[in-house]
Amino acid sequence: MADIKPGLYGINHSNRSFTDRETWGKNQFNSSFPAALTSFLSAKGLENIYLYLDKKYIIRHGTISTKDLFGIDPKSDDLFYAFESQYTPYEQLVLGPLHRVDLVTQSVKTQQCLRPIEIKLTALPDNSTCNLSEEYYGCEIVIRPDTIVYLACSIALNFKTDKTVLKKLIGTEFDRIKDWSDGSEIWKYIPKMIASIDKIILSILKYQEPLLIQPIWKTEGKSPKLAKNCLDVFVWSNFAFTQLFLDVARGELTGGEKNVTRQVRTIVWLFKMLYDFANKGRIDYAKVIDGLSFNTKNDKAFAVSGRVTQPYMACKELTRPRIEKKDIRNIILGGGQNLLSPERRFDSIIFNSDDLFD
Image 1 (tube, rainbow, N blue to C red):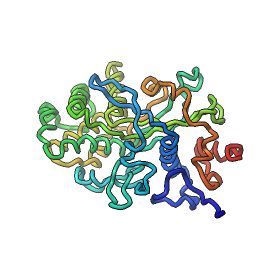
Image 2: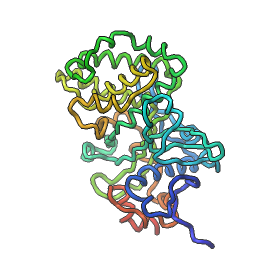
Image 3: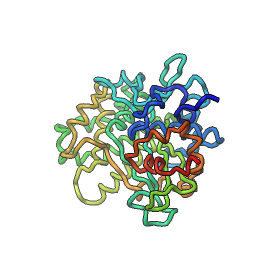
Image 4: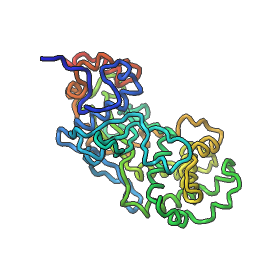
């Protein structure tokens, strides 16, 4: 019998060669492993936990199949995993070259892009919840600016053929803003921006779609030891994800301080991108992100702790993930674990857990 080459479950066609050690580095493993995990979940007859928005702006739980998530059956030989690639259907919406997204699913035959997906592999519990009881464990999530660009594009695409609809939803009151980079001037418009984004989302609610895959890996409290039931997959729709940082910002607005926090700044970014698309027909995302920094670094859009995400994600699958640690040997194949360069907690745990592959 021929030796099985290093690989990941279900990823048969991709722009990564899993026989190369560099493919198992921290940045690449953190997106390729979740893609394989999602396919493995499907093979076990399970669906991903789907966080979506209802018409009352409440984030609800449902499920989404990996087929609907990827835009193609994960067992199909026509599925190509294009990691760190551009989602070309968005290119006509922006000025300048479009940045890459963690994963673009494509058709092998037609090369058509199917889905743009951001991936956030998150630890459960995080530092803010590790001392709580298990049912209150949560995951920190850190969002980069590129995710907000893709979010804006996913919304703007719905108005591509008729931007006047978007312009009417936004209204004309924001035309009075003289300096978008002035936090003190922008501050009084933030509640109106939130209301405008809500209005836009509600108008296209039935078109919400998956944006972000958030796999979780659970340890035994603070220890570096994986829990028996340690892996599951949560998926945020573009509108549920938007409501996450809108809700955080709403809380900050009622706090009294007039600081443009990262969450508030993210609202300004998203709104300005949609405002520009409605009025100019293109999103100059580089100008928005670089020009509207409000004296805060642009290395990330925002971050929220497990105490913030837990109420949205709370369910039996968060407390007891459905995939057991013994299943990792069926996801990482052909000795791939030996190629890991453990620089972060999850790959380090796998690398140092020989018993997983006995």
